[in-house]
Amino acid sequence: MSQEAEGKKRGMFSRLFGGGPSEPEPEAAPQAEEEGRSWWSRLSGGLSRTSQAITQGVTDVFTKRKLDALTLEELEDVLLRADLGVGAATRITEAVGKARYERDIDPEEVREILANEVERVLEPVAEPLIVDESKRPFIILVVGVNGSGKTTTIAKLAAKWTCEGKSVVLAAG
Image 1 (cartoon, one colour):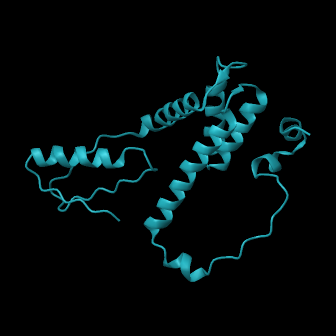
Image 2 (tube, rainbow, N blue to C red; image 1 turned 60 degrees about the horizontal axis):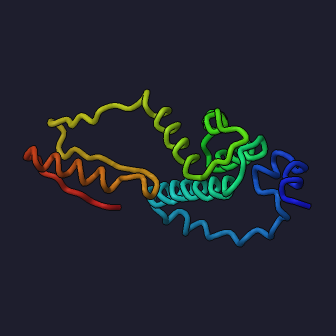
Image 3 (cartoon, one colour; image 1 turned 90 degrees about the vertical axis):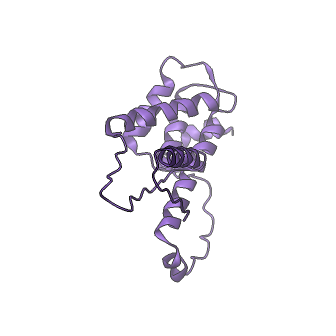
């Protein structure tokens, strides 16, 4: 039986959570090991897993395929598994499907649509960075998934403030 026919028979939870034959649960890591990880380490690991899940999922769904209802449903499942939320997953799926239905689509085009949708969602809450000179030291925490431009942004901010005569210290955690 083909995967496509099999995918139509599977229920929502099977599609959403993998639906393959159940495998034995791996042994749970000791609780002390999890507690020993810092907040930053847990956050960083979670963001990295989300980024990898989206990238791999999009690539798997859109490799040399026409955009049809099943493909859009699989994309929505990938986005939900990556914790994007139902509203965002639905908006992104609709944006991908708009004017592209029954056409070939590549993963890069989907990633571009994802980036544009994330930008659109963040735009209303974006605010300029205003450095309060009365607060010293002024600390900025930069968080983002791998490859999102954190290091480049930090370097540009440091260069700008150094040129303005400010003292800049960079630290990695």
